[in-house]
Structure formats: structure tokens, C-alpha cells
Length: 196
Image (cartoon, helix red, strand yellow):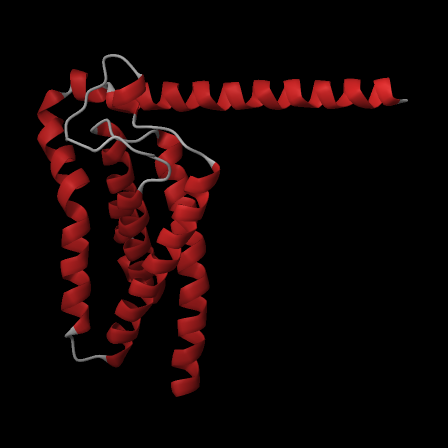
């Protein structure tokens, strides 16, 4: 009986290890697919550098603009964005405790690294968490602002394009952003409804 149980556990661990290996391989292949585009279409590199480095600051400027707009709903939206960002970053820090990997330019050869980045845990992407959370909040408070989802995705892709994150880093960041934003937006929208 003990031998069968031990054999089952061993088999499960081998299956799990194989699954992890497949996921890591897929992560690297997706990284190569996106990052290598910088070698093939170098004219787009400055665009993606700008997106990867500065779009977050543009999104913060948009929040500041809404903060000073005359509408109380806009102020609530900005507060919801800030609280969502805090929650998403906390979730990201917790996720980073369970999985650790350094940036692709550290472990892979021939990476198209277009920006300088300190070597540390690249999982998940803080830039993507903050950018996508702001974009999701703007969208959830005004469905006409669906284009912000595209902006958030563009930031995520740019972080891979410039060689500082793996695709699973940014995908995890997007999931954490969505979870945090839905939780906070739901609470804030209930508050707005009660105030009306």
C-alpha cells in the first residue's frame, strides 16, 4: 500500500515537473517571438522604448487631470484608481514571494535589451500592474474609454519588446490588475450609488 502511494506521488511530481518545464519553454518562446521583433523592425524600437518607459507617467497625468475636473464622479474614479493600484501592487508583491525569476537579459542570450533595468525579480511586472490598473479603472468608470484597455496591453507588450520582462510576468500583472480593479471598482460604485 505504501509503495503504491509513493509511486502515485512520484508520478504526480513528474507530471507537475513536466508541466512546469512546458510552461517555462512556452514563456521563452513567446518572449523570443515578441522581443526578436525589435531586431526585425528596428524602426519601432524608439516607440516601444517610449511606451515602456513613459506611458505610465502619461496615465498618471491623465489621473491628475481627472482629479481637478469639476465632476465628483471623476474624483471617485481617481481615488478608485489609486486604491486599485495599491491593492494590485500588494497582490504582485505576494505573487513575487511564490515565484522568482530574473529578467530575460540576464538568463538568455541575444536579448534585444533596449532599456536599462536593475537585476531583480521580474515577476510580476510592476510597470504593467500600475499601467493596466489605471487603464482598467478608467474603462470601468466609463465604458466609452475602451481604448485604455489597448493602452494597457501596449504597455505590457512593450515591457517584453524592450527585453525586461517575460510574457508570463506581464500576463500575471494583467490578471492581478483586473482582480484588484474589479474589487475596488465594485465597492466604489456601490458607494456612488448610495450617495445618489
